[in-house]
Length: 400
Image (cartoon, rainbow, N blue to C red; front, side, top):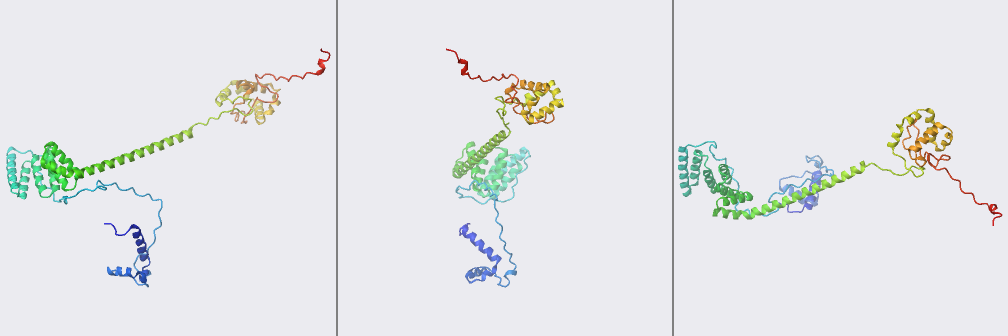
């Protein structure tokens, strides 16, 4: 039953009651006399003003506001959560102890089968006379004698159904269907029992099977009775399944999108940066790769040359200031190594390869080794040509 006031008013009322618990003396205010009367009307009492602070009432402490608390996921809707069903004829379930089922492993003798048939005949007679309790007792005796006869369980289930004991009927029909899954009577009576309990889908399924196995007008009538509710529930379930499938698909697509974004980010972070361009002052040639340079260092002549302290100091000096190369133009040992490097890495137009740091005692880079160096054209460079002298007008004297 819903409260007869709005949620907003209930929230205000809660604030007021919490305030009264914290400070009950306010209930003595004339404006709140009606609240005091209300409390006393139901046998309560309001503490006087003097003892309000020392009363046994708990001190109200406002709870700190909690933020960023995830809201709980809504509970899954039940089958009948948003549909209206006709529950006319639904009864309370019976709670009797389970009835005797006989020994399921017993293989009756011919005499026991015959005696069971006799008990069944007596039960039918009692049923015709509307003596259902006697018929029930006789069917039980017949079942104990021959527990392998599925029809006996179905007929006793029918009696339980007429006595408004649907759970007992379902137990008998379950046993009958264990023995014979194609028992139309067991499906029929169990379907009716489910209908009395308001289990519309189960009722429709059993009654459909009963009519399929052995059409019966009463079973068909019962089926038409439960079909509207059963269809509403079935359609509702299909709707819920569609929503669930759509949610799963959305989550899958979100995961896929996230995985693609993460993969792209990883690819961007791990992709090697490729810097291209010429070394400064290289005269148009790009710096050779470090792999070629290290292969060059493996040259035995180069290794032997750099073991000479004089060569190491010279290259350190040139690395610090490329113009210092002029100091070594008259040193055949230094110039021989420079010419070898120039021929290896593209002549005068190429820059000194990277990685010179750490070579010959940790000297720095050697940018623009040959290109543009004053007084040093480099291996393979064309000799500089002087500009043509302008013609002197005196040379033309005496010419016609």
